[in-house]
Image (cartoon, rainbow, N blue to C red; front, side, top):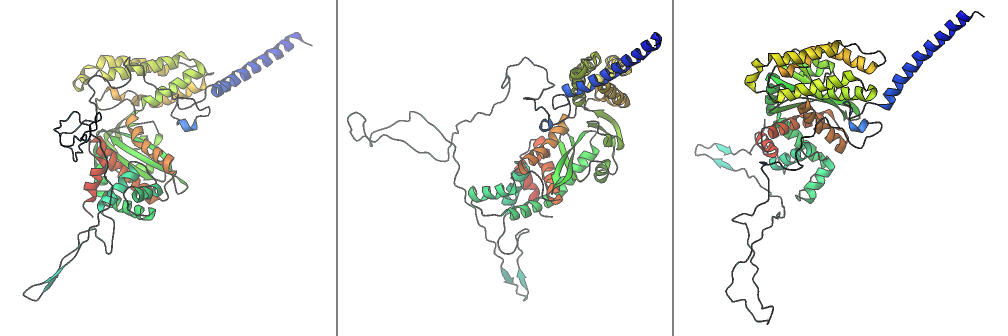
Length: 446
């Protein structure tokens, strides 16, 4: 046998084996360092290994736990004029047994307790009268709007049902139990559904006002999440800003939903989102992709490969975010040098060659090259945040609702929740009482 051919054959075998080893090592890295809620956008419920705690992106602040100096507390305080006073006066001497009920006394100490009165429903009867004029014409008064024939539940019952369903996430059968046991009002789950339908219908004008605010806002965030609707896959979307939250129920996750609610797009807005592709199909001034998502992906790459590129990229983003916090609105026209430094470092990282044996890192780099112009938008506009946390917080209530109630029985119920939750969250962002806001909106029937 020719020794040279044998050597060539063995070298080929070694080369093939080296390629197989590299491929298997890359696959093993993925299994040893899977994506989970600590290093990606995967929710904790889908973690394969269920880590005991979520890894936060926050760094240690050095502050002690609890309220910080200057924090306004909410301590329960005694009132000057209580609704009821109960005097506890000694009647007999504990030493000799003498009757001292008529002796002069003085207050030694005061204590107060907050109690709830027994809740009893108030039944209001509306009576319509007829009067005959001297001309012979008979006039009959009108019932107030919303007072239906027979007996019905008042606006206060409807408002409270809507608040407890959309804000406190209480399912209908438990809500009926609360009304029966706490408020002494016998009401069925079906009647509660109809009551909430009426509140949602009357809230439509306010919902449209929030829609207009969302459409015209210069900076806003967007996010979406899945939800079961009568056993089928549905979606909830949010478009939110600092002082408003607009939530939509939909049966699809595509750009069609955005076009249906916002046919003109967001031509005068900067949109912050998590890089979901349908958001790039909507006309906007600029995009800002969520850096919190990006940081988690870089953590995953670091855990898989211990790659310096990922560490450097993560450090760049952390420094840019920290620099953003130091800027005042008037500083943005004077930050050209610092922004240029960040941009140059970003360009260098996106152009840095990555070894083919790190496929996850290569895939991430290619995606960032594609969306390069949307990474540092927040450094050019004061109101643009570097992350999409506000939208994730706005859409989280849908997942809480799902965990408690499992699903919506109808698309109408999902729409009602979107309407009521939009009003409630917008009220909270404006430091308003959400129950009072629903009461004001439902006071006028349309």
